[in-house]
Amino acid sequence: MSSTVKGPDGRPRCGWCSAAPEFFEYHDKEWGYPVDDDIRLFEKFCLESFQSGLSWRTILSKRENFRAAFHGFDFNEVAQFTDDDIERLLADKGIVRHRGKIDAVINNAKCARDMVAQYGSLAAFFWSYEPDEDELAKPQTASTSETSKALSKALKKAGWKFVGPTTVYAFMQAMGLINDHAEECVLREEVEKARGRFVRPEMA
Image (cartoon, rainbow, N blue to C red):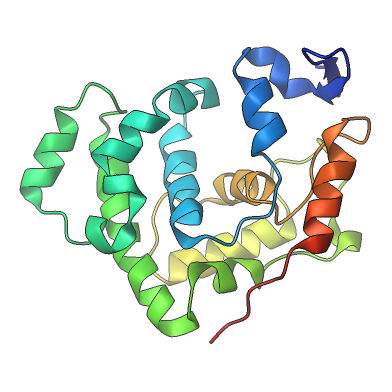
């Protein structure tokens, strides 16, 4: 795949946008912009976990259904889900009905709650793993990194599930911990400016 494709306005976007028309809006408005909101960070981790073995197009098309099913991904609420909730989710045709992944979201919600108590916020923990520029591969060339492996290991140690280094790397790309827009992509400079303005959260 080419590193870029023409967007609706004729300007270059990351090549992966060509996989589905709806990817352009997601790419232009969300992907790579730095995020410090705990709910959004938790949601993205959950959706990346659900994507494992599937396409992002499938997950993106069901995102609103996922949000409704998991109470907006408020991990304090999801952490209290019961067996009845699991059965409800397994019967919900609007989401991916995979028991292991559903169980992982509930498990990870409990871990997220504990992490906030320990570090002050999920954002503070995740942004402590922002890599240095000299550690990064050329944009659009990697699916894992030493940092994604380290973060994956830390999350697993803290009890999280479905958080392999590839899933973690995709999370880092999407949530702005790295700017992985293609060098020729028209959004790369804009995202870099957003990262420059972003105030990194600190641990409590």
